[in-house]
Image 1 (spheres, helix red, strand yellow):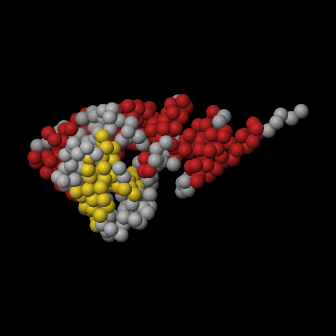
Image 2 (cartoon, helix red, strand yellow):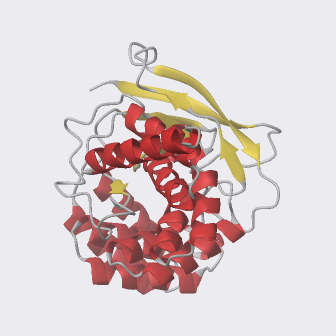
Image 3 (tube, one colour):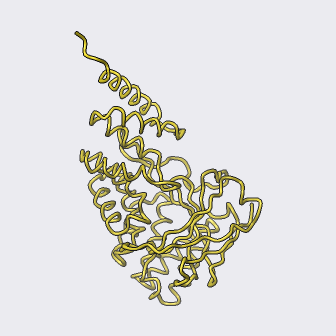
Length: 335
């Protein structure tokens, strides 16, 4: 394992730089790696973190949404191809450092991650209630985070329960407790913890996003649509990935205009925020609308992404259908 380090700075140096989460994004999975110190510095050992929460694996056209399957928390064989490193601070957009091209892994210094102010966002990635937590509650929270890093969910669960018991409005502790429950496949308990996090701080959007994903997994399409609408209304910048969830929910509700609008926004995203299935959804919707050229283009983009899933065969069938109909529509009428 390689020890990596770097620094986080704000574009105008106006914000404090202590305790900023450093995250590694690999496809649709996010791994919490470490926090910065009071001077914005960070370091961590690649592959040490086990704090990952995977997004729902959803086929939006054929079957109901469900989990990824397999062990979502295994990191031993996790490749860094396509992974990126970022800082996470409410009200700021983070530059990212690519990890999958091999350029950085020979050296332990990754350089500087710059945070840029985001205007107009009302929803946050951190909770204002954390600064009000009593000292003992913060200590329990920190123990929980450290336990996650050591892949000890029993200790983490106990620590977060202590933190929320000492301070019932500890929104981030409720959220982290929900993540622990989710990793252990205790989904009803996870949902309750996320709901308590939302109740403690309605502007803290991470629990609402996780509630949306749980709703998708349970085929509760209206709840998923409402939750993703709320997240995107409050912060469409840092939670732009929720356009994908919104498109799925509205498609299942037969709200094709809303689904297409969100799917188009989802396909505009780059890096780890882009889910290739967004092109699949949009390709399917355009096929139903009779836009065979647009459908073919989106489905080809999806297939070119090299998906290794049950969607591939169905997407190929849709593409063949769209190509036939496009060819037929372009043929001159027979006399």
